[in-house]
Image (tube, rainbow, N blue to C red; front, side, top):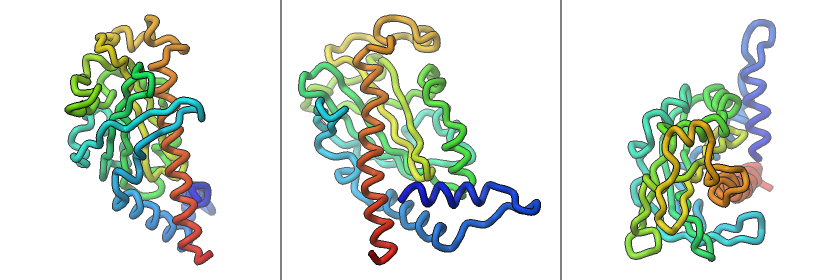
Length: 231
């Protein structure tokens, strides 16, 4: 389970007699197994055909980006990952059943030592970063769907969450499906305007969809850990 990796990472980062403790063999093996899972699992498996937001609202996947390289992420985003790095970026675009909100959801598979990734988990500031225009990931338009004309100019906001074991980061970038232009960089930096209010559907969805994905990925981590323990 993710919490086991996190505990092992804390042990690594805590001085003991002036020398950082090393993670146990079991923790290291589990960490490697989870990172292998995120490197090899299919995008269709990690980003399901439907997502349930808060158990009542369904988001339907319109398409998966075939490009899984990290080169499409903004440089300010990847810089904020340091000293961890991106090894794989998986993303798909979703729309809710009422066709009000579009969202590109991404999973960034992280590389680096356990300490590097623990540092990212501890230092990542989702609310602050959501106000930084240069860090906001791009959207993924899907030809032949409601999101065919989905563009960066329509983006309202975004949110990113790092898993407690530091093996991945999940983000969501949201917009309204009617094609309206999103807030400009100044408005986003000040979190001003109705589109960026706490009660705005775009703001709420940007926070909720990464949580929904984390629940799915945590279940996969638990299954992998159980299989690795031979239970």
